[in-house]
Every structure is written in C-alpha cells, then in structure tokens.
Image (cartoon, rainbow, N blue to C red; front, side):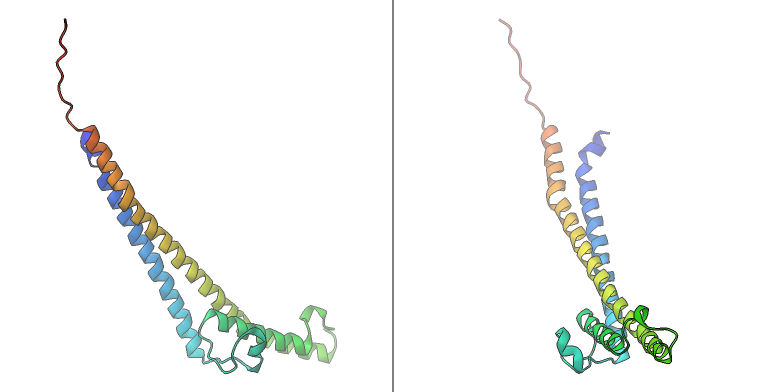
Length: 168
C-alpha cells in the first residue's frame, strides 16, 4: 500500500497522457471528417447561383465549406418554394399542384444533401473542440496534479528528526 501511495503521481501522469492521446484522436477524426465532406462537395462540382448575393455569397464560387453549402441550400429552397409555394399549401388535385409537387420533390435530395454537409461540418467542429478541451484537461493533469501529488507524498515521507525529551 505504501508503494502505491508513493507512486500515485505516476498514475496522474498516465491519466493525463491518456487524456491527451484521446483528445488528439478526436481532433484528428474531426479534421478527417471535415476533409471527407469537403472532398465530396468538390467532387460534385456545384457552384453558387446568381441569387447567392442575397445570402452573402459570391455567384460562381464552388461549394467547398459549410457556409457555401448553406447558401446553396437556401437558394434551392427559394427557387422551389418561390415558384410553386410550400407543398402543404398547394391544391393537390389540380395539374398545377402536381407539377409543383414534382418540382419540390426533385429539389429535396440536393437540399437535404447540402444540409447534411452543413450538419457534418458542425459535428466535426464539435468533435475537434471537445478533443481540444480533453487535450487541455490532460495537459492540466500532467502539469498540476502530478507534481502536487509527488510533492505532497514526498513531504509526508520526510524523516522526522528524533527529539529526546529530557525529563527534569
């Protein structure tokens, strides 16, 4: 038991190192996820339309990040709902209503894909932020807890000077 207590600071170092490695893994995986999403968006070769100015974008820019994906999703929504209105408000029994349904349903897959890319970027950023916090926790454990434990245990084990009590 004395050996365990004497070497408790080594456990604190190991725990700090464990936190740092796992935090680094989260940062790496979040960055890798962002790169995969970006590569897929670039592969699709989608560019912002002329309406991008309304949403803060530049027409003709390639979609390669969360901001441009969100802008293009809003443009698609603007066009689909602007031309035919919201599906729930349409008369579904007329020829015009059915044409609006076809237009709206054909725009949904691309809108959903772009919105999923935006969410994927957000989750990847969240994973990277959590990883950075875990790295800081590990560094704090190694920098503060391990030395405190070492010094506290070393102070307890200092030999005490023997004093002779003289009785008069």
